[in-house]
Image (cartoon, rainbow, N blue to C red):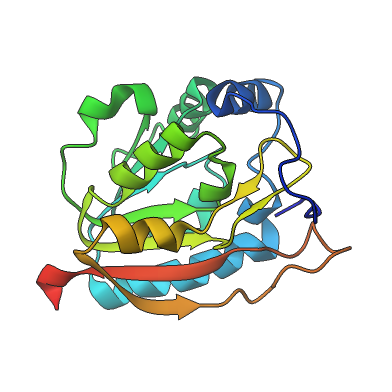
Length: 216
């Protein structure tokens, strides 16, 4: 996370998150500090260890961003999904020589959503889903795309911030109310927990790892 949290509720005007992120990437911006340097390395350490332990072959990530975090990962077969057409185009160009990495926009759902993946990922995305319908659809897709495991890396509390593109959500409430077939099997706190004044080098996200009941 790169922004200071606000203590006030309901700040900021509603935005179209899809348009926001398309403009963000067209203007040459990155996915943020969470996808770079030590924060990216921390995520990679946790996820790469999980991939090896659980023998994960196929992965889908909802909200792949600029692909920098991907460069730290050891996926065998990977599908990255994002709302931004421009960032998907950049990722296709960046990883054009790797046939095991595919990229789609959310408008191409028929090309990726019907498959059963070993692991579905959401990394630093849920707090950017500002619209209720977008949030609900995202959570539905995330928790219906894997047959084995889901990893969420996010905050888990309700809070608006002064930045209209940043809204914390207590996503575990959705899981408890709508995803009875999924069990939380591990919680891993962030190695670099959020600190005011150190927004560029710390994070509000922690790891939540879920397992499908069919595997219990």
